[in-house]
Length: 457
Image 1 (cartoon, rainbow, N blue to C red):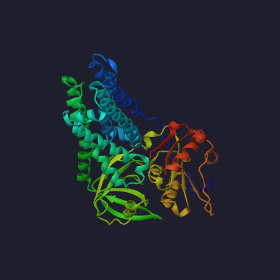
Image 2: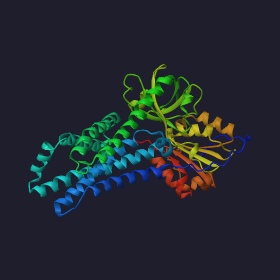
Image 3: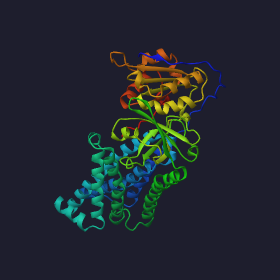
Image 4: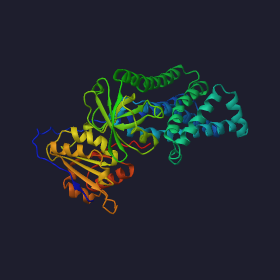
């Protein structure tokens, strides 16, 4: 790993206290989710007198799959309600991964529910599968709406598959995903009208209503009312656009007391720029500088039509923001020594942390990987911060002939012989982040001290 070193300076600072490891709510949240699933299965157990013969076994399994599907849909929506305790405590990317994984489980349960119920009733009625499907869909109460809802969920799942997702635009994917709300609404009535576990069981019906209404309240509050309140209060507008490197621009936004948002270095907002051609897209961008009175800044690389258009924003453009989100903050730190490892425009949240993380001189290091020296965005600012704080700054750029300079365990130990005693904040393109994570692990850094958030869609 070839490195060039930026300036450092020895200036005395008060030694910061050794930070304590933050308590993550991930364990209790997962326990709550699985505990809820156990309660749902208990509902089937208590409402089922006996299971006799193939038809009962098939129908019973289908009922269990259906109950878990309904419960899973509520959990998936709650995970994406942008509840601050989840977004900041666990991390937006981790919650999104739970949502994606849960979506695959829910789709599998939905498929099992449909197949097993139809199969079981066809065996019970001694009818063909086609005849039984027509009878159930067209004559059972709320079943036609439930079928339409299930088909919508299937379409959303297909579009979300990785091979398909790469071929559709973000806007198509996003707005099809919004149809999930309609699908769940259409299917809800079928659950109570046709579910044997709910018919005649008022307590179960009230509990199901409470669960869905509670999730709907979370979505309404955190995804609608809180953002409306935020933007009505702070009224952000673009103040200036500054070119930082080839294809990289900083967007400065000013508003009414944005410091009251309590955003921290390392966090991000979802930004919507209210200008023709841009207003329908909401994208996550990290703050690239610590929030200042009246001023917020993000730095964006032109990777597509939307992000490229941000470099042409006009001063005065209204901005709709949602946040702050993310857990890549100082609260994750567990050791006095910290390495910030950045790749490309992934330097933006780490630049803010480089400025604000409490550290003794020499205990804070930033390693910045880029293709060429010209691609080192915010270089002047980084060098000024390093000089002012007595921090270490290294660059890893390609050789003059274009040969790539990889991040390796040996190279990391050469730069920081005691790297295994560091916390590491990692942010960069997916390939670079993955290879750097492997190098850090090989260099002796425990997984619990490698802090990373990814917003790859």
